[in-house]
Image 1 (cartoon, helix red, strand yellow):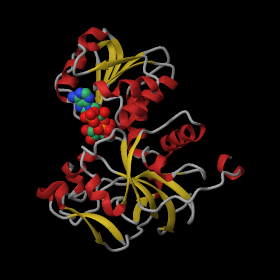
Image 2: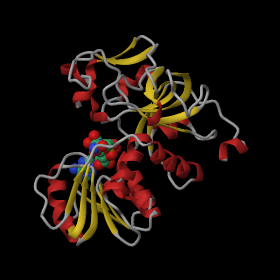
Image 3: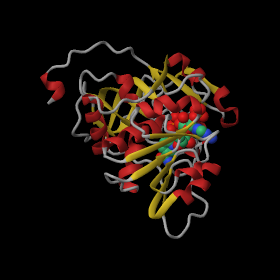
Length: 317
Ligand SMILES: NC(=O)c1ccc[n+]([C@@H]2O[C@H](COP(=O)([O-])OP(=O)(O)OC[C@H]3O[C@@H](n4cnc5c(N)ncnc54)[C@H](OP(=O)(O)O)[C@@H]3O)[C@@H](O)[C@H]2O)c1
């Protein structure tokens, strides 16, 4: 099968190339997904799990990408709950070959059904960004209606979903980013936009929650904005030394079929709209991998072009 392959950690993005790779093996409780669309995280070539297995052993050559939307081609031994030919989307294991390929082996529990009529491109933009936003706001942050949440990087992959979910949950949302992000962030439901290059963060006042996707100085300065008893949730890095009177949570997103189903429901009824930037064919995925692709939104690799589908009763039941 065709895949984007990384062989040399030191070479970074320049070392990515489209190559022939063996068809993946479906282990117990796995499925093989024929990939229609795939997503990746720009920084994943820096993750240890991209290069090693769970025991820390070298596993090169590796295939990056951990978000998939596609159709089940094969079931592993003993796999139940999903069927060959079914449309699915989800997250693949950090320590296994990924989704920038024609086929990928995934644990079935990491996938959720995808209704007919939802474009694979939209679905591939959701698994990591959507689950991270969901878990950050609700699982770890315990956001409630009426609270105020400050979301950094609100026009990005995670931030843009977080803004929409928080707004839907009845929270007051303050979004931050660069000047060019203002209209996007306000358009997704933020009440206030803060330009991190020009506006003073400290003028925001106290909030119930900060959801930070940027890290560094922005994260450090944000702890002081959280009211006593509030929460600072971060995903880029742990906060260095948060005050004792707030809760600070750094986490890595977990696969979650129920969470995917919640996101899919919102995609289907229009409550959620992932920001898609550029889409590229698999052969151009190496070029697209860099973080500076020029536009905003998430880059999606289209391995198979979607055939338009008719939405029938089955799709919405
Ligand atoms: N822990 C986890 O489970 C988890 C899960 C998902 C992602 N992550 C990490 O979280 C981070 C964000 O992921 P993402 O997918 O949302 O990335 P993304 O799509 O690049 O979004 C980040 C957003 O923040 C903006 N931004 C970054 N630095 C800024 C600054 N100094 N001032 C103003 N705006 C700034 C970016 O704008 P520009 O594009 O203009 O820079 C972009 O809009 C990454 O480091 C990723 O690896 C962690």
